[in-house]
Structures are given as C-alpha cells and as structure tokens.
Length: 152
Image 1 (cartoon, rainbow, N blue to C red):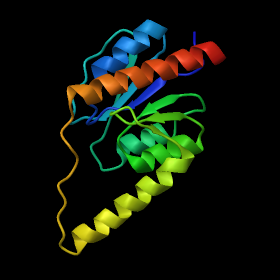
Image 2 (cartoon, rainbow, N blue to C red; image 1 turned 90 degrees about the horizontal axis):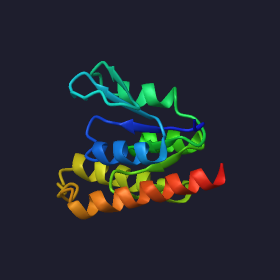
Image 3 (cartoon, rainbow, N blue to C red; image 1 turned 90 degrees about the vertical axis):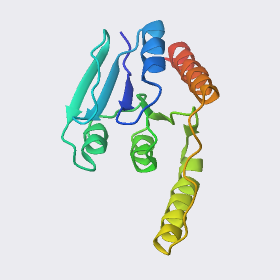
Image 4 (tube, helix red, strand yellow; image 1 turned 135 degrees about the horizontal axis):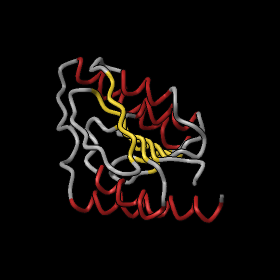
C-alpha cells in the first residue's frame, strides 16, 4: 500500500474518471471531497466525503487532511498554495503542475483580474474544457504517479 493518495477538490472536477482509472492502475487510494450539492458515485478505492455547501467547506476539509507526497487535484489557487505549503504535488484539472515558482504569479494575476472586474471590466472567463485538456491531465497524472512509484 502506498503512503500517499490522490486528493480531489471534486466540486467542479471534470477529470474524476481519469483520476479513478489512474488510481487503479497504480493502486493509489483516492479521496474525493465535494459539497452536498454535487452527487458523487462510490467506487472501489475511492473514499467520498461530502461536506456542507458553504463557500470554503471543501477547501478547509482538504487543507486539514492533505499531507506531504499526496497528489492534490484542484482548480483553486488558494487551495493549491496550501497543498504546496504542505509539500503535496498539486495539479490543475488541465494537467498544469503548480509549483512554488508559478503559484505566486497565478495568485497575483487572479487578484489583478478581480480588481478589474470590480472596476467594471469584464473578462471572457476560462476557455472551455477540451478533450486535449483531458488527455494532458491524464498524461501528467500518470507521469507523476510513475515518478512517485519509482522514487518511494
């Protein structure tokens, strides 16, 4: 049994099936955390935790349980920062690996965009999630799991 797991901010995660497939391939347990507003299906090797629907409940639950070497999958830069501080490996749902070097830029850009929105400027929002994004994520997660398997 591995000493790490895949922890998923599952509320709006479009790659749940890819995570489950990879976890089975590498025999890595999964913890999916979502609010009660999102229906998750139980699956072998996947622990599902549902929390209340308040704004930060999922983030707080994960922040209190994430450990070094866990793989955190999230689209939330704030939660990614917490995962990095706890020495987790953090991936976006599009396969970007967050690092200490990149997260500051992403947080700063988010802050700047929020200030612009408050002053009346509207942005386009994120690009639609594509099959290429899905494949990129799956490739990156597989690469991370192979690396962990070889080095632990």
